[in-house]
Length: 253
Image (cartoon, rainbow, N blue to C red; front, side, top):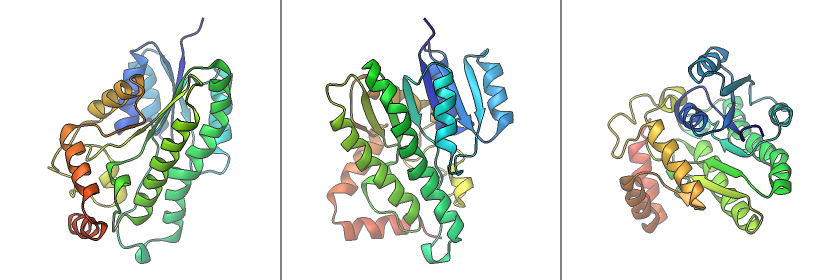
């Protein structure tokens, strides 16, 4: 029998690349999806072909269909790591409208479409599941990252509801909520330097390893890192008016 197939989106760097590496060394074939073909090729070489690259711009309307078809060609997905995402930093009124639409497409529309396409095979096999990478910021509002924060809150709520619906099916869903992570996110979002030296800063490898452990234990929501859990729990207990002011002070344009 062929090794199980994991589909990893946003696989060319950061948390997605870390998931791809770890899964490829844990007995999975990995369909790694990203735009940067040079990064995907390097992943294929480093993993001796256990990673299979798929170059795809996930902002395109038919992206989920393309990814799902490739997964089916490889025997069907056993695990989905829905990691691809981006943010745009700054006051919402000053953002380019296309940037805002791209964030919603990449962070919400695409993963919901892809999950809907991959889930029937998992349900038919009565095994497998998904890890949806959201954010600690999904638990509170994020001024100056309003669209990004809104999409991550959606993913948290969606994944929790989906995990409940999947009880007893053999398929599990986890919302993984990392805090500050040393990745390209800040640079791409236009907030380079703001996350440098942040309390509880984790590496992508640490986040991916924590996510896989939590999924295997059957958890529904997991915040990797002790300090991340403490800080998020504290913020969640404060009045929302207070958390808004705190976050706005941290993420100041």
